[in-house]
Image 1 (tube, rainbow, N blue to C red):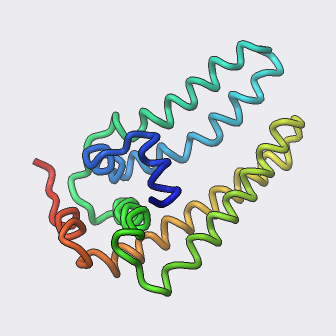
Image 2: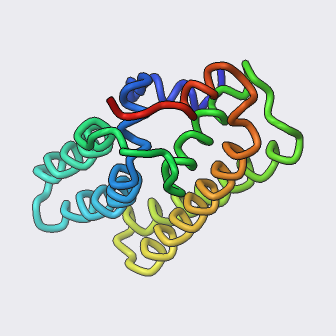
Length: 172
């Protein structure tokens, strides 16, 4: 089982939730999670230990986001294809992905991880610039990752009966 699939299981991402997450609104609203979490952590300056409340709200928002939007009307949007590609990437231990798709997603995860560490450092030390630069690096890595997942989806959408079912899905 891939590390990413374990995270998806932690968030209880079943087929229905994944289809809701394929809604472009879900993907775009998901981008708010990191800034909200950072802001919640910074709120310890004026809230003290009560900052745990906005932190819990930000984490709840991360979990709730793909569950409150409806499934998309179609899967033709760039972000929808990115989510489908992410599902393919999570399933790479069962359905291998082509060689040319194997390296860059890992590198982009390293980029996003480095940005996350920088944002965390800035948040812990209450230093605005590392926090902002870290958030930007995370976003750049994540958006580029989604773009790579679109490419992966385009290459793999016929690779298994399960993927064909996703491709032919229509909102009922």
